[in-house]
Image 1: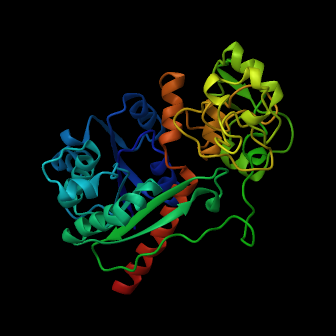
Image 2 (image 1 turned 180 degrees about the vertical axis):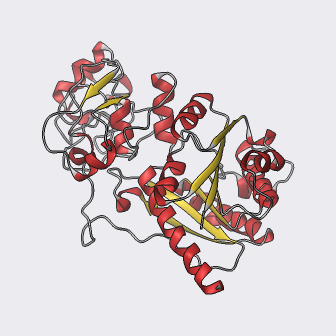
Length: 373
């Protein structure tokens, strides 16, 4: 049985990569971010990348590109911003892009009629109007004939070396039971958490701002995670560090592993932080620890906003290190400027989280198939 998928708001293709690891055939992806589209096209050669805003994407175009008829797609995935949806639902005259993008996602669902859907979003969606946004989203799916269940998944519970929380909606129109993948990593589970050392300890040192073409791995026995990321590669790209200015470089030697802005001498602090409470901004100017998990990888690994300082070297983490912390395999190379590369990495669903979702969906689909037989 071939299970097919289409990825809307696909970005560089982290979720698609995870689904492919689980055995899905990803047929197409859509996004309006040009650099991410180039990355998706290079790293998903069997899928067709369709550039442009979703408002301009027709169901007919998707069926033409994939060769599918309505109702034949196994799985439609995507992460449309939904934060404003409940507000939009009650004030229909108000235009909000985040609400209209969810409407566009529903339009594609209604047109393609996939058997299953997966939609991911930020956890903050629960706090909007006491959960009204989530209730409104599920009601819209129900109106199209889809039962949907939501859960918060922690990326570190599935082998990703990073604290990251996402709301994942899983649904179907075929009456199959719906559940979410069980955690596999962490205390009391089959595998321990993947640490920062497990993830990036084999990548060679860099100077501040150094931007080599490709680098060889450090000597020594790789960890299980590093072997998984390397595959058969002997060198890796995108191991490029951002260039920090002198004032930041003067601050870094004072910050120990696990330390933060509070370890920087007062006269070297940014003006705005000289008045900050010691209990505030605990991640700012944070230095990672080898035996810990990364904080959430954002679209800018800016040391002023998070713990993105290398555990030992006085520099910010490279694009490749950020990608490793997001569980991107090393064959996954990012196109565009360095800034665009960080955005692609930070916006992505970690592929290993995508694989956990894909593996679980495969089991649900197979169980439904057996029951039908």
